Amino acid sequence: MTKFIKLIAGLLLAGTYVQAQTTVNTPGTGVNWNMDSLVAHYPASVQLSGTTYHVGAKIVFSPTDTFTEHSDAYVTFDSAATFEFKKSIVQINSTGTAIWLPTDTLKSFLRIRFDSAVSVNIKGLALKHSNGISFINSDANLDNLNLSRTRHTGSNPSGALSLLNSNLVIQNSGFQESQRSAVSLSVSSGSSLKLQSSIFRNNGTSNGNYPQINIGTTNANGVLIEDCEVYGSYPKVGGLAFLNVTSANYSAVVRNNTFSKNRYGIAVNGRGIHATITDNVIDSNNIEGLPMQGGSGINILGDSSLNVIAANNQISRNLWGVTVQKSGNNGSPQVSFGRILPVEPVDTGGNHFWSNGFNDTLYAIYNNTPDTVWAQRNRWDFEILDSIEKTIFHHVDDTALGWVMFDSFYVTPPVDTGTNVRNVLPAGKFAAVFPNPTTQQNAVVQSETALTALRIFDLNGRLVREEQLKSVKEYSLPVHSFAAGAYYIWLTDGKQQQVLKWIVTQD
Image 1: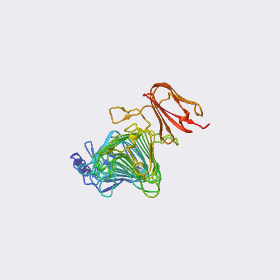
Image 2 (image 1 turned 120 degrees about the horizontal axis):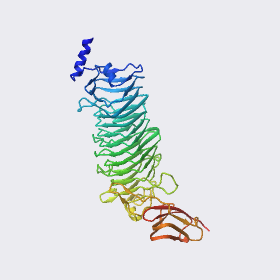
Image 3 (image 1 turned 60 degrees about the vertical axis):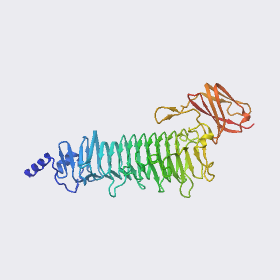
Image 4 (image 1 turned 135 degrees about the horizontal axis):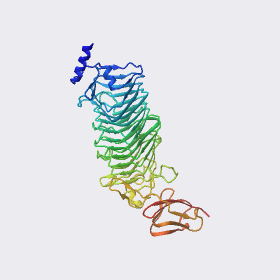
């Protein structure tokens, strides 16, 4: 026995690995494993040479066993090796970054699997040239996870990181150059995802029709994608896609992200999705250059169970700003990019559409449905209604189509920040209208600062009066010029803006 142990040690020191078993199962007796204990108990399958651990088998962590690793371990895997965790507790908390990669980087190692894991917490782990990670019936918190050059083989899920009946929180992570999608929830995933402060770059190296973030269905917890950056470079690959073809309904919140240089920015397709898209930069998603096949900043396709509200987004330099399409016989998607009434906290408009188009024609919004799309209180390429109309395709262009209800709400030019982002004027409280309601006498707009412009809209968003003012603090509104009803008065002093609601009543 002593000679055998010495032989093993000698081989390790020489850097020559012992032939491993194909699969090793831990005993399932509540043992807490780490890399060093695996080396000690399974020397034919896990070895340490210098500072490098080598795994030559599929290590299956049986139920009740745990895996805890707090070092910045550098681990190499043979092509038929991996870790699988079954009803285990997993804690990886690197002080810097632990790196797992194949022994031969021209190959990949098997997919890491979490199956019915009791608890998974991972911080500071980089997987390179792997076949990815699967979470099945497992909840996990992932922080500073980095997946790069993930390969797709055989019947593996197409996402570098895939979920099935699992709930994941992913923060401060990076996904680069996966062959297909970086993160994927399948059509029947039954999972939820909270994805925050992460970067996606150049995923979809196989150049197939796989978005970098691919969401099929979720559970009742839905999806949050926030403070992420999604940059592409492959013509067939989209940014973020939702596709629900099941009877399940779920909510999706997409806010404060950047989508740039993808085949499309965001696609919301299918049914039963309630999507809120706010404060995103959706710029230059035109990489394929084929307007009949993609190029939308936001594409919406589905029936009346699909509900999308978008506010305060910059939608710029795509082939199409927004495209809305109907599928099936159950009505058109319910879409609003801003609606004055009814008042909703999120549906405030504030989107900025600029330079979306191709062949010298601008396409801010293309409504390819027979129903109404709302787009009030936004900013456009132009300030004049007739010019804005030329950037919108709807009932005016084809009477079989529905209307896009828009206005020219912002009259001041954007503030160029020197980046892709252009700012709108901040909101202020500097003016009031008296009397309000108004019956017979004229009303007066009074301002603490000198006004430079005024516009009045009816409840349908139609512009009924417009004035360029010369630094006045009072403006008279002749009541006889307005029919009874409610109006919105937009004001600016050139530095801030305010909206007043004004009521005109009958005698």
